[in-house]
Amino acid sequence: MDKIEPVHEMNNTKNEEVIEVNNPYGTFQPPVTPLRHSGPGLTSLILGILSLITYIAILALAPAAAEDILQNPSSEAILESIYVMIIGVLILIGLLLNLIGMILSIIGLTLKNRKKIFPIIGMVIHGIILLVIIGFFSLSLI
Image (cartoon, rainbow, N blue to C red; front, top):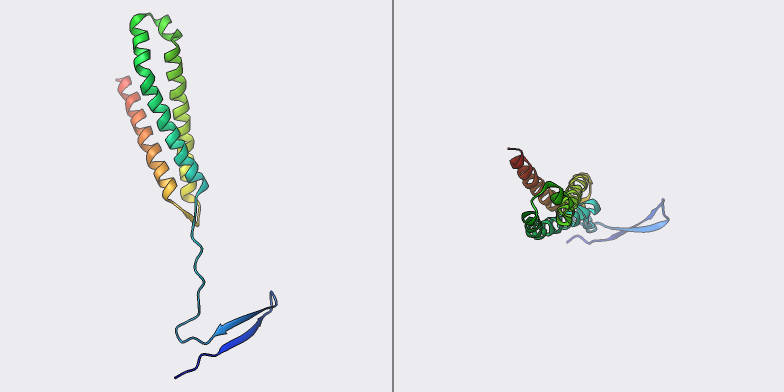
């Protein structure tokens, strides 16, 4: 039976002693460090959740805005309604969050040596929301 003998060598770059073993099964490979999560991907996911909360707030304010409009249906009263203004601002904030989140998820997917799960989830959330919003706006044009 072959005897495994350590071989001592000096590493010239760091003056450290390197011990290699004559192993018939190959050399020892240190474990690979796990991949880290993508920062832009995680931010995209958080922005997706915030945009979902924004759209839920819009749906919660819609009945109050409808009641306000039904009480005074003139165009001036509609434009001066606080609920209509808040809903308009929330729609713009939600769209801005979705566009920024989509850009961040694309950046997160292009980063190398990073996990891709958060950018993928963020892209799915933002994509579905943007498709639904584009669908609603296209229905209003008909």
